[in-house]
Amino acid sequence: MASRLEINFIRLLSRCESIASEKRGEAEWRLEKYVGALEEMLVALRKSVSKPTAELLTEYTRKVGFLKGLLEADKLSSTTEKALANQFLAPGRTPTIANERMPVSKTVHMQTKARCTGEMRDELLGTGLSGNGMSETELRNRRGVPLDERQSAAELEAVLQHHHNLQEKLAEDMLNLARNLKNNSLAAQNIIKQDNQTLGQSMRQADLNFEKLKTESERLEQHTKKSVNWLLWLMLILVSFSFISMILFIRIFPRLR
Image (cartoon, rainbow, N blue to C red; front, top):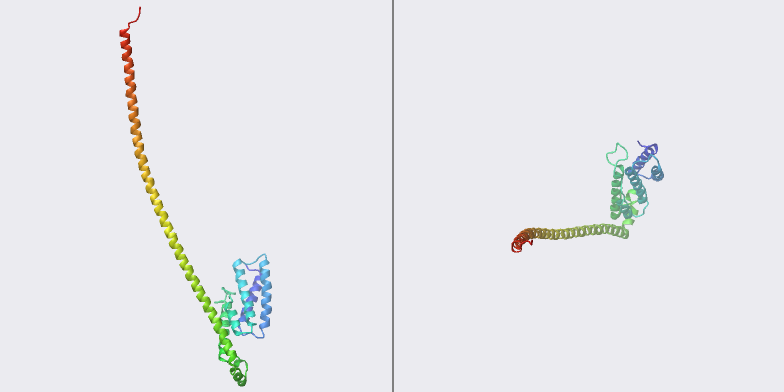
């Protein structure tokens, strides 16, 4: 169950996201104060005994960082800088309260990017300040100075070229990574194939050696049996010869009386 501090934090966070989704202006200073309070409450949540899970803390940090980055992006002077800063903002991934179908921070992010895109388009077309109460004379004077338009167009082209270069570099890195992975896979496959061949040769050699050892064992056994047979016959002959010699000796030399 969420603690009272976490409940207050969620309520204030939802209020900040609601203010950010509306047209700010006079409420800008309140949003800054609220975001500062959110940062203090987030620190207290991390130190709390009944702190939420690590996933929730990460999501809370992400949302507070998004709101803080949104305020910092609005303080930039150049429209191109605002658009680039908003491009790198990371909104929350889950709804803050239960009745949200889509996270409000994502909606705010899309609205901010659309507004920055519109401001850049109006700035390039020379109509950026016409909706803020500029007179037609001031608008014509602004249009009469094409330097700002060229600078804005150059900044936009530089941003687009930068993103294009990043995409090309990323695609090239991915291609090199895939090529290296393919080469490593082929090298590993060749090594495994060579190892399998070496293992097969070793197994065949081991089988051949086993057959030779078996043959030599059988020959040795037969040779051992033959040697035993010859020795037995030789002993029988020697015993028989000794017996016959003794008989003859007794017959030839009778016992003295």
